[in-house]
Image (tube, rainbow, N blue to C red; front, top):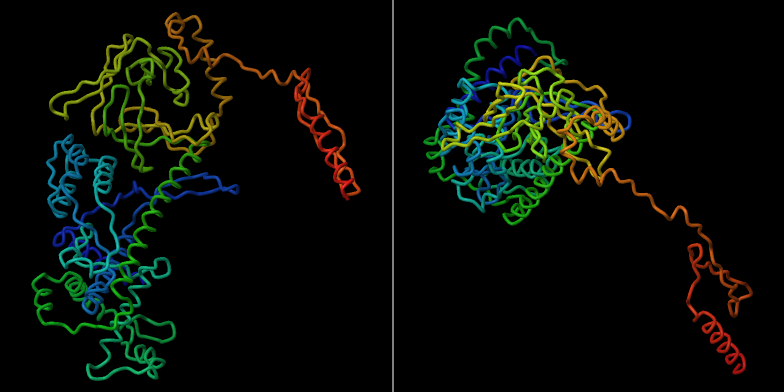
Length: 566
């Protein structure tokens, strides 16, 4: 088994290299900082641990084998059903959609070319070999490239020209989904088309298959399959005799499989000029395949949106009770903070460095100040334990003609050092939902700046660090009492804090309730008395309605007249 896996791994490397160098395939893998998250739930269904799915080479090996199988099936069914085959395409991306990626690469001093998939792949590969390249920054570039691309979709070949059937991301001419019929309906359709293709090829041109031959057709297929060379547990084989032969065949197998998977355009053009025999007995009409593709594309889009929303929800539930510290890369500069991308959780968000009153809220260590410098931070920054407030500090954004020279500068009177941030800087941030149970909805995770670069003193933890509203109130009250004698703090009392401190109590609790019951109503024709419940009346309140007695008298008079007529 180990030798077989080694052969498959070498073959997968060759196939992937050919797709990238010949077809222009774009590598958008995230490596160890994968964007696909895996949640571990507790007994109550709450997320207790979250981690990114790491990519291993065996995953690439399996993916290449599946791509090769899907590509081979796509070419096969298209030859037989050129007007009704179900393929999966990825349209070419216009270069103007890569503006965000172009700006990020420009900030790193890298020229960008998005005229084709091969040019895009070369730009990304060149970016990985620069001085500012790192796993975090590379994840940002791959994320921006992925977001700029259009979604791959299913199509009926009769609705597209031959030039529109390519797959931009994989760098191949024809592609479909064939390998997962147990979880995708598109694969079931492709399986039926492939079976119809094999049935058509085994039927001579001048012979038609009758209904009586249907039962034996499957047995004929199975009987004609070549015997597998894989070692069987039911058949004894001499492994020593096979080792030498396998070693001699490894290189030839890899070369032949690679050539079969990636034929040159000249060979395909020559094959198309030979007027292949077209199958007219397709299991699906072109209209049916078109309707199926529209439905699949719609459902696939909904499932991706649902998956994205579920990931956001579970992240908020996780950060309600946990705090994580991880790396992020700066993607933008604002007057009051930074915009960052967190590869580990595949999310973007703001990092505020000052509050709404323009008070700088930052870790004093970034300015070479002691931990107790400044004043206690305000409520929105309480989750960051190292954060302190500097009311006299400034947060200034310097913009220039060249976007690469833009910078955000933090200064405080207590220090001569400036804290400067630029695009593509790597920072360490803390993620938490510190106000979860103080709002009616689940808020997104809040990002707090911990340090510039990566600080090894902060480790990612999953400890229970829930910050409830009572804890926040206690912390804020303690910090406010500490700074009660600070004149600068007293001068900056906002209207919101004043209104929030006013306690509003309902006065209804001091009012006694009583029930007012009218006289019992005697139902005519039925020997029972129905008691009608009255209204809820506040204490000291009388009902001014004077029509009740008049209505009762009128009803009694009407009943008396009816009795006389009878």
